[in-house]
Length: 113
Length: 115
Image 1 (cartoon, helix red, strand yellow):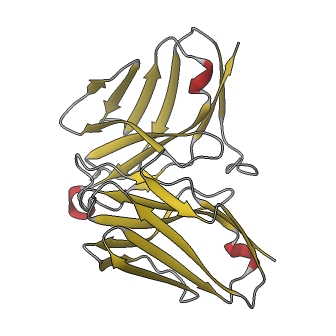
Image 2: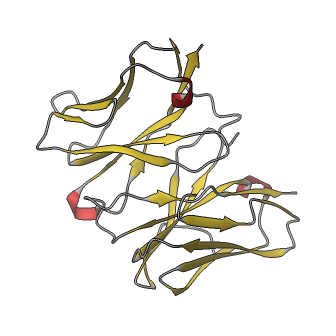
């Protein structure tokens, strides 16, 4: 896949369990955050986003939590399924350069049947 | 079907070759992007076009030359590349260049190998 050779942190979970993927960001001026999912052989796919005026946002089976105090972002996936196996990237941007998304290095999620 | 189509999916080229990567988006978006995804590095923004005007050239070597003839098509012309340019090149589009409520839609990339 596209990330062969990239030594990604890996999270291994049992099918049906909840998954939590974490991301630390460094720019305190960042005010918009996005999570992307990249499956093998595909480009990144938008999952969910959150602005800095929020602490939590929920989607379908996913929740993003933002802690601005410690500059930490997390993605929670409920009832993890085999189709959730992928590399997950967080990305940040700030209002003065909003199209310049800065991507993290990613976390590989493996779902055990 | 992503709405953003990239061709070719795989490309092997020598350092003296000239080749082009093509991207087409069917989403009616006004902004298009080239990103580089290589081993051991996060996604790197290369170029940004908004309504066919280049708004970002992120210190990319001149051996990479983008072209945006219209808002639906984006090319990346390659010449005299180096082996370290081997990577996955991803095209993306968005409604506009504000990332707020205008998330990037990525194609599946072109896997480039420079020999």
